[in-house]
Image (cartoon, rainbow, N blue to C red):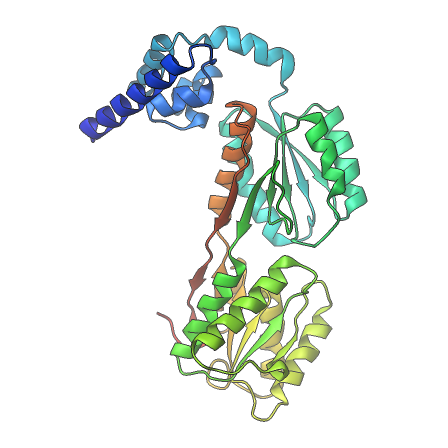
Length: 364
């Protein structure tokens, strides 16, 4: 059980906490202090406060209760205070509920929030005016915090000042603009496409095309930047002819036509990186319609790691977004604001990973 390591960690945290307490005798002990001193997560301490001891081992429960006692923490008194001010509800504002990506992300957020004793209240908000309405409605519902699942569209975010005025903690996932007053989680889209391009180059491809996403979204611009970065690193020229719109806001026929345009070039590209997995699937159809083979004639790589990728023929190589980690961090960050009363903003960038399957011509 690594008892010594846990004990040493606890003693170090305890000594640091006591030193801070001596310097700041008037500072109120928070749930974050308890979590740090006991060497557990804020969620675990929240389970203790909400009378859910079955969510942890007996040893963990006893350790947390001991720390509460040592720090003269009053959970019952705090619980009564929370009851008068909080609803144990987190609002989730989703930009595109039709997008499988956000539904997947929601499936990770919900059980983590529920484990911490919080319910979700969902609101679809595709445009700025929708977000304004979402903030108004969810504030009226007295949500304790908000999680925004955004589409990285560059927009005017002036309406977010209302959140700061209302002092509602908010975490933004995949937001284009960063705001000092809020927590942000973004994905390394550029690094993901850089990995995909690097992999294709190592397989011997030198004419790599890119069906890019909309440049009005940060994700589209960053993925194009990652593609260019890998080409430059290997001394391969960037060629506008090999870049076409695979805008995932357009129609499948648009993506199909963009793929046909690439296949008609001379010399033809030997690999295509699509803006997402759905665009990649349509591109694969177009390649077959042109009488070509995958990956022998044209290799294909997608982005997003959608559930259907392994079932395409051949199975689709893709860049995977860290959705489970994103969901966990989103709930963790909003709870730090709600329960631990953290005031400084955190901006987190999570890495993407390449999942290699048969469509790129290599399975390892």
